[in-house]
Length: 229
Image (cartoon, rainbow, N blue to C red; front, side, top):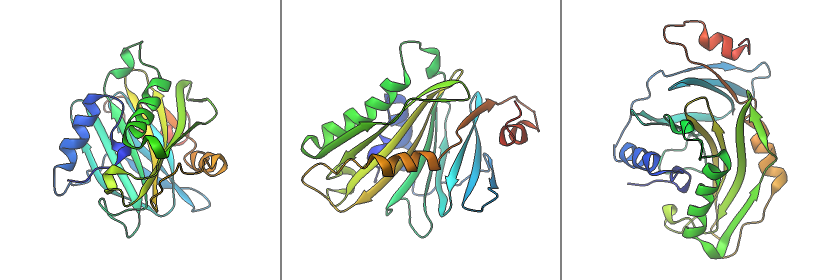
């Protein structure tokens, strides 16, 4: 069973979700959401209902879904570049959700994001890279973004480095995260902190929007796409 560092998310409930999900050889991709091509054709608006809210974000052209799983506690969806696979990829965009975690007022988006960084550091203290990106709010919801790097990813058996952008968002009831990971050649030293590149990557995921997920409301997706809530 292969997993990625980015899937070692902030709390044990999502870790257990990821491990159980990837224990499966295959996973069907149910039609959980919808997508709409942007006017310039360089990205799609991905709209996904996750527990109490609908999460919209922009997904750059060239990515395709390879895995999706949901259980009563957590949600995960992964996309890689076309032609790549779940176990052999150079870039991956992962969407995750943890049900009801936002009801705990002691947990902040900064803590959620930093917990990923702590796991990176524990895996590769001699080649660890970290920097925060400008504070964000999405649809009025608190969020925090940072980038973490590991010169030799243990989940790639030390054969690759791994760097990931992590955006954690506190919803009305649930916590959400969007992560964009990249693998390159391994390194014994910290990966250079390319803030310009990763700021551009974050901007390529925008807009990020949370909308109400009202049961039996057939117009909810369209309203979220059109930002009419």
